[in-house]
Length: 197
Length: 197
Image 1 (cartoon, one colour):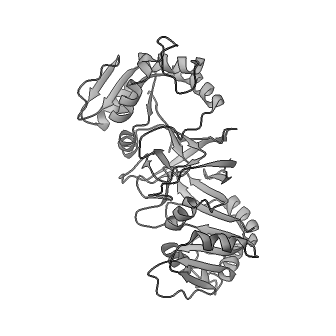
Image 2 (tube, rainbow over the protein chains, first blue to last red):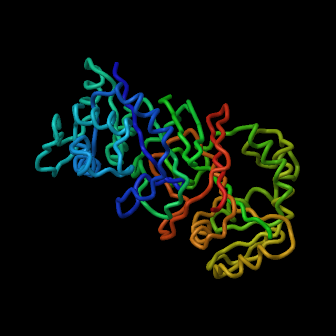
Image 3 (cartoon, each protein chain N blue to C red):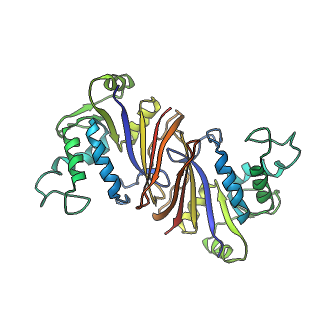
């Protein structure tokens, strides 16, 4: 059975996105990027909501292009961590849940019009590496409601946003989750890792 | 200068209160209760919004009464931790921020009709022990907006609520905060402690 892992950065006051949708509040942490790069090869499928897909699709397909022209939010040089992330994201099967998206031209992308818990269960039973979801609060909410997420990775930023979007919202399903790790980093980031009960 | 400390339990998905306002989602942690009881004597003033005040005022004034009749959410026996908490809360100066509350009969309570950052600054300059605020999301938001909170203690519960109230909301003030502690407990609770930058 493939595992479905959620990764999100959240502010200390509990938001995964600012109202303006920008990521300028994120505090980088080199040590975490390295650890993430080491594990990223364990995934071959990525789930997306439309907004996160469009954000990723505007950056990652070009991330391995000419280093002089490629935009790079982490600085002027492409790091080995970014390289590993770009390779995984570009090669992975990408499922975009959207009722409105016209087309998804990033390689290996597939638009899924209707969310179906049964189809996600079937996907998890297929052969393959593990499945990951970044951002995509609306889809994370649906997955959590249906108890389909095996591991929650919350990277708590040392930042108060004051307002923003909660990661899971308008849901009705409460769940106890099991803490696996709570680790602070020099940057002030804290990784909270939970598995499904 | 007296320090102003905020303590709140939050769900892993970032809510400090469920939509129904009940606390049945909180996961108890004996070790943390003990540590809190040891520090509680360092406070002599408590700030409240109306809802949290009414919740506290319905319980704590009676918490040291006849043990056979006193309600006790932690079990049939009053613990030393509850005793310390009750003594501090009953004796402390309590400022309730509310435009509507008719009267505040819990001993040493004072209603404050209008929030004023200058008056909180003046309060912090008075002689006395430190000041604490529990719950009270609307007041925490105002205090955070005005950069008046010296320490944020967030006790992250191993629970997804699915929906609820964000602790700080409709605010416009972003702030970097400094991580002091990130500690996981056997119950799955995680204490995140930050100080003002």
